[in-house]
Amino acid sequence: MFDSLMRKIVKWLDPKLERFRTTKPPQKYTPKTLEDFIAVLQRTPRNILSEQDRSRIAAIMSFDERTIKELVVPKSKMVFVNSKDILGPLALDKLYKSGFTNFPVVDNQEKVKGILHTEALNALEIKKTDRAEKYMDKHVNYLHLTDSLQFAIEEIERTNSYYFLVLDSDETLAGFFTIQMLLDYLLGK
Image 1 (cartoon, rainbow, N blue to C red):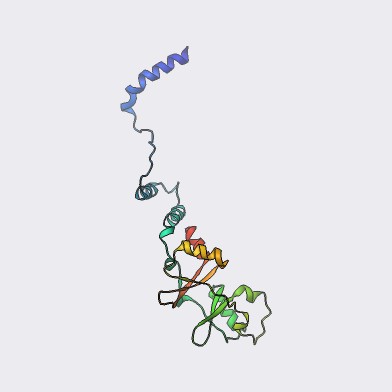
Image 2 (image 1 turned 90 degrees about the vertical axis):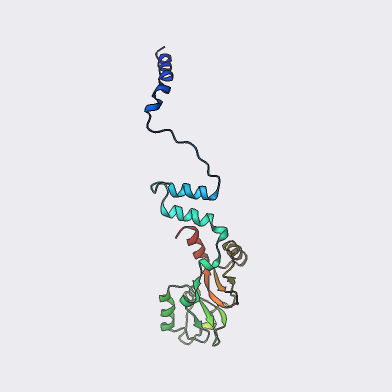
């Protein structure tokens, strides 16, 4: 009986108290366009959606529009090895200190002959007279600056490679691209 009476009182009072309410319950909102969705993301408080989460969402949303050019390490920052270089302690030290794990091997005309992978060097007993060409991988994979990131994924799957040299429109070496760079981009790093 008391519950019934209370429900009637609440039902009668509710409309009369409406003008005193300071906050209204949130209404569901569904963005209609990509711009609307981005605006919602931008308004989302930082304690709900971190900067890293925002970066990840932005990377995924813009993935189809991105090209290799946006992620490539330029040729000017690459470390090359001449095919005739002797892989002695000084040369190996230089390679390891560069921070890279793959190095294009070039001839005297700077034409790429292969790739030297540091993991191959770690597993071998290198003599002080061994030349780079002895340990290089002659199989080189290429992408172009204008290739999409989606195409890069397809090439990674097709070739089972994680390192690509990147060419410009003149077929000149422009830099390199790795699967790690793609993952970092997708993870918002």
